[in-house]
Length: 127
Image 1: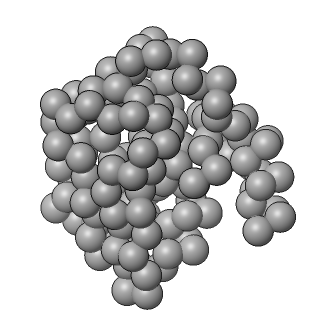
Image 2: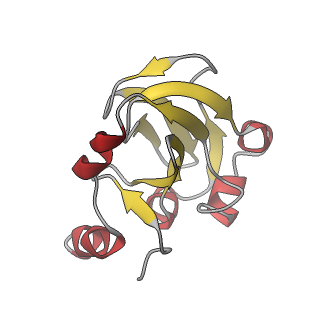
């Protein structure tokens, strides 16, 4: 399964879209498919300062609760109200309308700790 172009990925199945020093973050198609029907997403609050790879919330589905880890550190500048209102949006549009939050990055070089789409494909192929 080829991942969308231009994204970076964490081993915890989060994706990152960078635009300068702002990162948009969500969970991958693989993650949402593994969880099943998502019923609730706990997002960080705007203004929160996050450390790379720290736990920042949960995703609840009909069959599991899974922690969300931030793939990059920085300040939360926006959350996706559409996901708060309808968590199933993550199942329908994991890379588009189902994004979780946006960060103003503390250190852009942290992106070097993430994987390319090809490397992420190798990770999930081994799962």
